[in-house]
Length: 134
Image 1: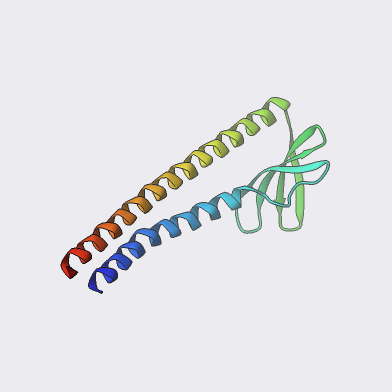
Image 2: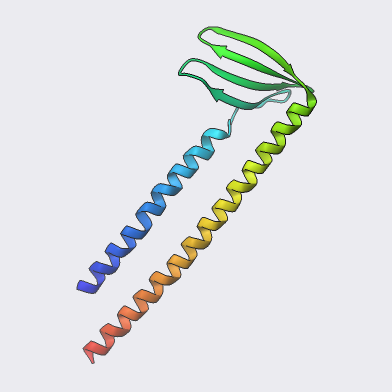
């Protein structure tokens, strides 16, 4: 019975930080993706909050993109973006997505290795229990 408590405690201590880290990562990634912010002809490429009420946006409308400021009750076009700038933003976003996917794969591998280690620990513990019972 005492071995089961330690095994359970070990599992909790290992997987709780993993779960918290996963929640934080998904929250950060979810905030980067502006879900529901694209239509047929318009798409928000980037959003940078400056304060609670103020933000900068890069909005693509058709073939053109604009840098827009959004503040309390006021929206203003600051600049029309050049096609090269838009392409650079897309490349950076693609690179960020690739790095995120690589990070998730690393977490999956670490989790898999940890699960194997815990299962080996459980098997060893049950083997030790069998030896002491015999």
